[in-house]
Amino acid sequence: MEQYGAHRAMLYNIGQSSKDTGVRYKDVAGVDEVKADITEVMKMVLGDTRYQDMGAKPPRGILLEGPPGTGKTYLAKAMAGDSGLPFYSAVGSEFVEMFQGVAAARVRDLFKAARATAPSIIFIDEIDALGRARSAQADSGSQEREQGLLQLLYEMDGMKIDDKVLVIGATNRKNLLDEALLRPGRFDRSIYMGRPTVSNRVKILQVHAEGKPIPHEGSGRYPEEALLHQTAERTVGYSGAELAGLLNEASILAVRHQKMAIDLDLITEAIDKRTLGLSTGRLPDTEAKRRLATVEAGRAVVLALTPGIPQLERLSIAPRGPILSRLSFVYQEDYGGRPTGREHQMFSGAGSNAVEDTGPLGDYEIMCAMLVPMYAARATEIVFYGERGATLSTAPDIGRAGALAHWLVEQSSLHPLVRDLPVLHSMLPIENTALKFERHTARLIRTAYSRALDIIRERQDAIRTIAAELCDGSDLVEGSRIVELVRTTPVQKRDGPAGGDAAIALPREGESCEGSATFS
Ligand code: ADP
Image (cartoon, rainbow, N blue to C red; front, side, top):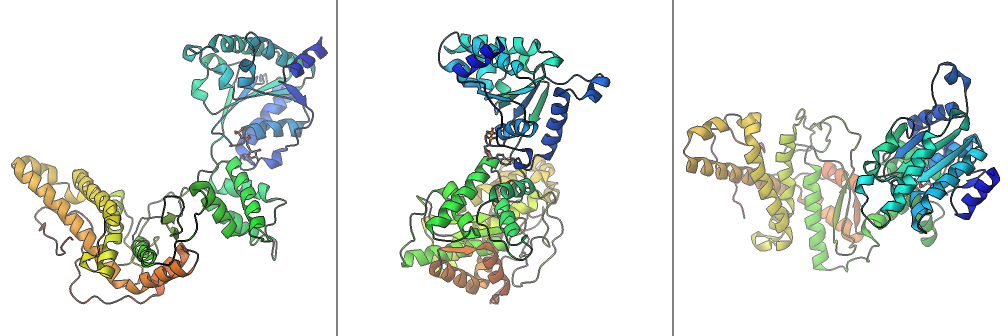
């Protein structure tokens, strides 16, 4: 009878037991806490008497929850692989896909087969396909699914401690699950498996780098470790599966480029291929390309000098599909504190390369400072190509900056700099208030644009060098090179009085709303 159950499960092509899944705990990286939790459950299921002596009941089911590719299946396989237990794996949709009336029978057979070879593990991937909330089922397969779900509940309720069968469900849509599945005695434990943090990405990359040609030098820790760390920093939001795929893509590119080992260029190409598609070739060396390079270099320089903005990763003008140029930043996900002028190494007052300590910056100050780089492209056009050099290509930035300035003034009553404004508003006639509002916005815009013009004028040499390197090289300049050039290229002295030295912040009441620069 027991053999019959196993046989039926095979017939339905579900719940096939595999003796060795080939995956071990050590292969699943960056999920140490989850592993500790699961090891404990495994001990209970396998009948560790210490738990029984303490009267602890083993959970019947574990629900692994989280986005696709975060290692839920992999971990379940590792549980079976490490413990050597039979592993019955099924996918929720398999139960209901084929014929009417078989879902319940399939569930029954699956549990029967697992009990027959206990201790064992049942793994049901995409359990939401079977265990969707009954109230949410309205399609043609709903009756079928409900039968399957009821059978699953029945099987789980009927399990005894002696059965020694652990049921693991995986889903990326826990919210769809029928509440009955989550009640005690069913899926008792729910474990969230999210996208890995930077340090966990390093660990996952280390697992998948095994057997791949990544150069080992010296102690063997460098440069492999450096490469994997840099890769981890650039892959914010990647799942474990995506990291594995990325290294694989880099290996394929290594063959294409006839390289002996994986390096950062290949990793970068693999990332770009994933996010932007294949490069559509280099732009021909024309005046238009040099102009694009100059404007983008101007924008990058101002960004490098703006506090509170993430570190520049690189600047590229290699076209990819409809995208002509791209500035990327190092995403600082694990960054807890607020940036300060000192932390942002490249921040300096206009006219000097000295690092200025501006103290901690609030969100409001950062947003005010953000206005300056938004005017950088237009300012570059004006400084390099004259008053008539402005083009429509830089207009979208200007539009966005205007909207931000407007919003900043609107929000200003929350800000300590102009806390007194609401009081004043209530005392002033409405038309006066509106005028004041417009004046404050205009002043903010003028100050920001004027600061952008000053920086571009002072940093013309650095901008020229970056633009030339962009055109000469592979249409790409690394962020570190931009920062180095900004830091080492002499700053051009301003002739007249600067308009941009004023702080980019809202004026206090009573201050003049007139700025010194004209807006073109
Ligand atoms: P999920 O079931 O969460 O959708 P999988 O377990 O199927 O994701 O993961 C797919 C692949 O991604 C695995 O086979 C493995 O190669 C890789 N992977 C995912 N997470 C990890 C991890 N934490 N450590 C190592 N590899 C991982």
